[in-house]
Image (tube, rainbow, N blue to C red; front, side):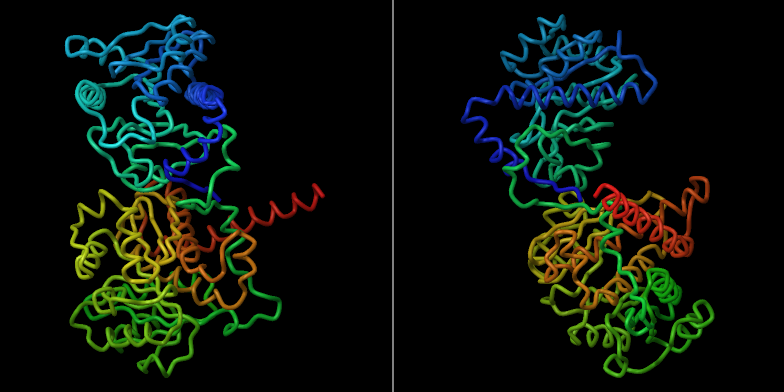
Length: 523
């Protein structure tokens, strides 16, 4: 599991070392890790280290010092290094080390900006070391103009961000001013929360964490990300004497005359994600379509109270005029059972819910929900600060909130947050969200009383609902990626995603089993 922290948390963990006079030691460790990451990236791209051109864009703070030390290490290994000082000053010791290593130094000014922008655009590596975790407000003045020029230039090489891309908020992922997108972000001590949330994740590229010795001083993480091995631990496994009822029965209230396919896709997602049985409640015409497409599903026109299930899925493909279905959705939430509430159900539910209710809005639906609850914002506001928005929604509703997107965020009312980014842009297709709702619903139905696997993963069983939602989002993303690979990288449909879920499940389960076998072998 990846743990990410706010800049404030990381700086607090560094404080004992700084007080002991070990700041330069931490900086050199960080710089060495940054240089090593750049060397690996260069070689992975088939480029030679010796003679490579490196341009480091530096600010006056510790972030600039990290970048200058890293560039000095690279210069000592034969690179041609240039430092572009974007502020009035620079870290004194790091700048001296850089100059001793043979690096060239230029100060950014209006009259030198075109020449230095061209120098950086022609480099094999551009190191962004202008702003660190304590910065607020983004780049300004000449530095902002330099980044704007580079963003629009035909660049030769790749960009490596030092700790985080300048202008990205380490705590929230919000981006201020022009930001130079990185291909690689080498971050120090721990991943920063802002790198795992959009829009910060848009600029981060591949994230590499470099330990620098402060890790034992870090508190509980601000954001967590499940990795494939975690999925293998958390996915339910049927017992030897399991039967369809013990494996979890999911009730589905979805679909309408306008969107009957949503019910089918939700049911297919649930079946593929291991539900022992799926019961569908809805209009007869939609039920007929479900029967034809999914003969395993038991269809009914009865009430929520009249159907025995372990969890409910409500809302997919429903609109404000589907009064009977919306009444069922409200009854499902009132039952106290775990519920995944999607799409059309969101406006019809009570303002205050419970942790076992998982809301699955996209950015527009979350904006509408927040506005209804008095936190007036628009879709643009949500997309500009996804982490803050999903946390606020979970706090106001007391439900678990999953915000769909390129990076999917899940926040619990206890303020646990998970960030998953396992998929592919091809997942942005009609019906994909219905499949996701089905996957999460099936996992909720299977949650049962077997909470040992959550303890094994370091998750409080009483707060497992956000982890289950994140598990579903990750499985859905991996299925989308698997389906895209099977289509030679081409487009996929929601039905294909549902079909790929068992394969994704099997792969992560094998990974977990392999890890357990290796532990036994090592013992």
